[in-house]
Image 1 (cartoon, helix red, strand yellow):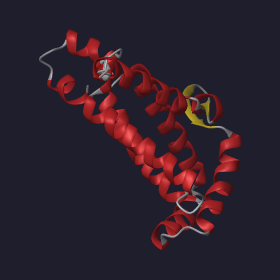
Image 2 (tube, rainbow, N blue to C red):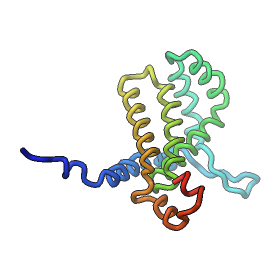
Image 3 (spheres, rainbow, N blue to C red):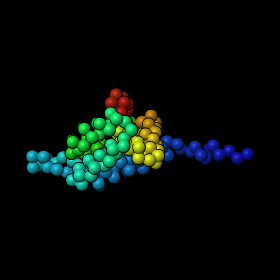
Image 4 (cartoon, one colour):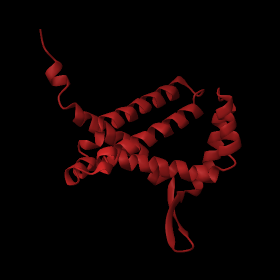
Length: 177
């Protein structure tokens, strides 16, 4: 009988780190498609949603809300998100980039994974009625975020490992890396 266990479970933390980085790239791509820099007061640079994302997002939300099976969530989408889409467009864009950077670089990974889980829940609830593919995609992303959170995935090939080496007795580092 052939024992595959030693070869199939070789370095699981490294494979979780690879998965963390791939998911991080997927989230971080929003920096190219949804983020721009504006100058507040004419000189202070701040991230904001691109004009394209601000125009597209309310249309997508209205489409998702049309047949949404959760009446309270449908109401939230139509009565809160759509009328304030400029705010929500910026929040979603910055949130996706933040989660992406956190996961890609293994920087404060539990925090990034937690906020990634929240985004996945909110997005998943918005598209719940779209297709089983949409549902499955969000379920998989949710459990990946859960894995990154509880395995402290940034401690392998991530900045979190360096922070723990540099400040091993820091309560902040112990909690958030």
